[in-house]
Length: 251
Image (cartoon, rainbow, N blue to C red; front, side, top):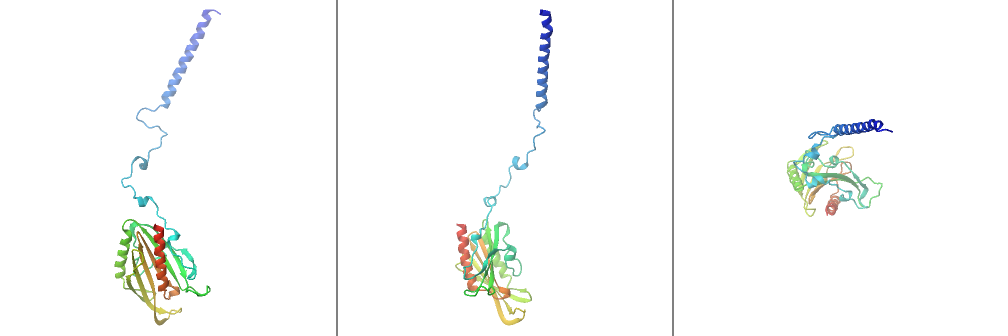
């Protein structure tokens, strides 16, 4: 083959090479973003990742507090009518003139309640219960626990009596020594009535005990069965056993 026949072939190869270079440059230009602009497929940054919070949460807020079942008291077998059961806090807390026991405030980090039903020792299991004790536990942050007791004492002093179901209930309170770091015992007294609602001429009473164990407060509300009197001896035992259970939980 002559040299004249090879020249067109060489020109064709150079043209193809030039076209490939141009196409490559065009492809690079189409996929590269201009300086200072964000790619169209990039998701916008959120405030939580780009801006640090101005008020970081406290250590107690970042670590959830859980009140275990073991922190609640359980009756011994000879006094237990039925096993303890979970109860909504708003139903377990007693009420006098108002919501005296629900004043935990924002320093409450956790709250829970359980109820035990008791009987007299030695009575047959078929007998009706003697009463129920609702126990509520509040866990507090900072000085919330002693603050709760202080507010409660003031509220109780402002409520010497109140009306309940047409009966006048009187309230007295005193310190309860030897139960936790500090404790308060309230006694409610009202005219006794029969199952038919008729007054018997006597009086009935029940007690509320509140004890602080370090940064926790527990409230015990003893209610006699169907409006009858509670059992102070059983409540006293439950309070002291309950304080020991909370102390063991906090260790």
